[in-house]
Image 1 (cartoon, rainbow over the protein chains, first blue to last red):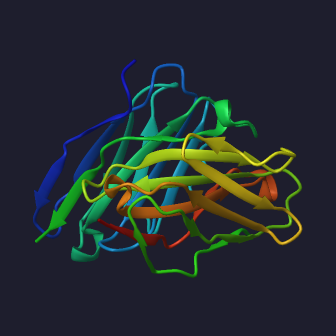
Image 2: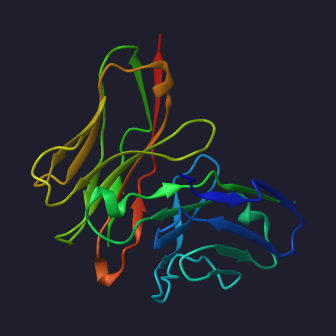
Length: 118
Length: 116
């Protein structure tokens, strides 16, 4: 079946502009995660959606970052007034649901969106 | 708070030999899951193997096995018979239930280079 898809694959923007990144999770996956990966670094958790529960936004670095998810489908990550330090690859992942088995808990990642802020 | 430590920034191995990538974790949770992901230069994150905290047997997936030592809080990845295509970054991760949240934590990664 189809995997996690993200768009755009690359985004170049000017400092101060707003950007919107999109994630389409695997169909049927109730959990969705956003991460940021700076060049040569590990993954930095941003936000987590689980079904219709309130999202866990504890990883968002500032109030310029926000994310929404429509039901259990598409999610968008919005960065307002972009700064050069926002340049990174933004990765989205989905998992079947929350649980401690490989089947439920394994996160499948999209290809990422490479954001460059000039 | 959860923490993942990968102490090896870089590892080298000869093709066809086995290699162990270290991962230690810290959590006060009783229930948690441990993961390993591979990230080749193309940037995609590829799931390799999963170990649940209540699993009594070490997880295995083909050439990958996870050496789970719960008392030591270690979850080392063993790759047998290394192949040139195994050259990549490898990330250890965990997800617990701290404070009722399910935030995953990733280590900083280990770069593996397989020599012919």
